[in-house]
Amino acid sequence: MAEGVFQKKGNIFTPTEIASGPWSPKFLHGGATGGLIAYVLENFEPREQMRFARINIDMFRPVPMLPLTVKTEVIREGSRIQVLQTTVFSEGTEVVRGMGIRMRQIPTEVDESLQPSKDTPPDPKGINEIKLMGGKSNGAFAPTLNANLRIKQITGFTGKGEGSCWVKVAVPVVEGETNTALT
Image (cartoon, rainbow, N blue to C red; front, side, top):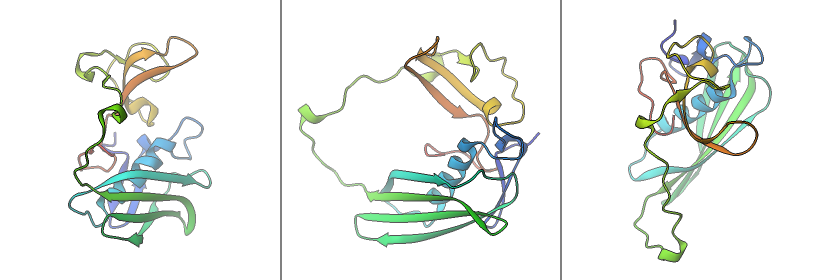
C-alpha cells in the first residue's frame, strides 16, 4: 500500500490509490486536491515571518487519477503581504487553481472585548477515533482518502445537525515528507 497521497518528482505529483474519492476510483478526493494545493503553496519560496492567512481553491472539473503538473507564481509581492497562485494541470488541461495570501506576522494588541472566545476544544489525544460514516474505527486503513482520515468526535454527529471533530490525514500528503499544520 502507498505511504502517501501523492508521489513527487520535480513538479509532477502522481496520485496514489489513497488519493481517490468516494464518487469514482478514476478521480481524486477533494481533500487530496486541497492537500496538494496547500503543500505546493507552503513550499513555494518560503518566507520568514510570513504565514498563510487564506487559501482559496477552485476545482474546475473532476481531477483524474493521473500525474499532475503544477505551476506556482507570485501574483503580488509586498512588504506585508504576498499573493501566490498555483495551477494544477492534467495532460495539459487546467483542473484546479489555488490562491494563497501570506501575511507578515507583526505584534498587534487587540482590545480584550474583541478577542475571540476562549473556549478551546479538548486535546485530541484523549478522544476515541470514529469512522467517517459513523461507528468505531478498527485502526486498519484501506485505499481511498476517506479511509485514511483519523476523525475524533468532539460534539454532535449523532444524526442531523451540528458537530465538531478533529480530522487528520493518517498518511503524508507527499510520500516521504512530514505533514505540517497546513497540510
